[in-house]
Amino acid sequence: MSNRSTKLTYLLLGVITCAAALVWLNFVQRDTEIDVPSVEENSKSTNQVNSTTQRYVSESYGVAFNYSPSDVTFNGTYNPPLEKDDRIYVGGSNGQWVQVFSKDPNQSIEDAIRVRFLSGIDSKVCYVQKASYQDQIKAPNVSAFTISYPINTEGEDPWWLYADKCGVYATTNGISYFYYNSLFPDRFYYFSIGQYAILSGLTDTLTDNVLTWQQTFTVLK
Image (cartoon, rainbow, N blue to C red; front, side):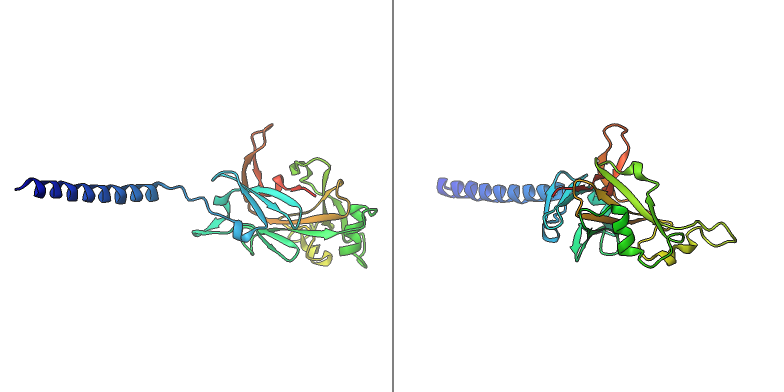
């Protein structure tokens, strides 16, 4: 074989080897890449923290909270926070949600809830009271309230038998409550959580307890 043929053979082998190496490297990078889902197209503003927790910031609602991506992925479908009308849904449009309501800044939160939801209803049947899980609310200047009613203790009917008399925002056998931050007296919020938890991916620094997304909820402006 001539020197020219030998050089050409080595050159071809070098090209083939480099091409094979590039294909292998691309395969390894693709196979080992960590896929952290993006929520940009579904949110007003979201700042990714890591694959365990993501920070959701809503410019239109002026609120923020953390949530765990794995807790809003069901049957392989990722459901990032979704803003629709006056609600933010967490875990899909059939999942948990928070709704915002406006009020007169000079009006107490208890009166604002009564006027909006309980007008014309006997106050002995339906009334506003502090939520029993107030201790779960971590933000300062924040209080939680529920629309409550006398607990049924007769027969085999559930304790929330009279909830229908108090409207759809009355407390039942799932977690729900009104959230009020006294630093923002012109609005309040309602959380519909239900009987399951969507975690935030964060823990309480004092107790090491795992926090749910609603426990990280903060009003920004």
